[in-house]
Image 1: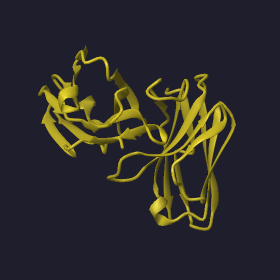
Image 2: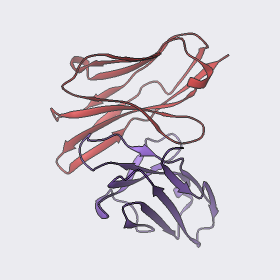
Image 3: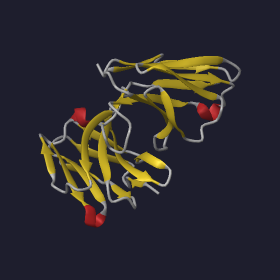
Amino acid sequence: AQKVTQAQTEISVVEKEDVTLDCVYETRDTTYYLFWYKQPPSGELVFLIRRNSFDEQNEISGRYSWNFQKSTSSFNFTITASQVVDSAVYFCALSAEDNYGQNFVFGPGTRLSVLP
Amino acid sequence: ETGVTQTPRHLVMGMTNKKSLKCEQHLGHNAMYWYKQSAKKPLELMFVYSLEERVENNSVPSRFSPECPNSSHLFLHLHTLQPEDSALYLCASSQDYGTGVQPQHFGDGTRLSIL
């Protein structure tokens, strides 16, 4: 079965601090995809990144960076020099096949508050 | 602008009412999804339509009835709902349906409150 754990329910940081959001996943499939989404107060989920299981290169996009480590089944997300606009709920998600077909599972989310 | 539009944004209804949620996408996508987001719970996939055919129905009570008349529109018909059905209902679309093929584009959601 697929599972995504985001152990941090809520995080508060002061603007300009760096913050890392943890994501640990479980799957028996060897081919899978990992995602991060941002959900601002408006409610809409915004896609941030997709990573497939064969690509362990870390990725940087502006102030965002992602660390994918298959050895620890983790796909952590770091925001550098956080800003108030980064305040949102962040979801990690996993897409993989299981015995019943394709499955797309979200983690419970981490609420990030960036204080001015 | 997300490309996926949901109406209404907010809905308050009694348990005996019948209402419908509407989702529309102008992205040319072939797959559309309904998710339920309850407080302090992970997003739950409810239904998936690919090329207007329902491909997933994740043990959703029959008081929720989806309809996909064409690839651009998706409805969720509601009747005889329970208080625990109060949640944010999110619609999403993707180019195709399959494992990790495409990221999903989400609408702003309909916040449903059952009295």
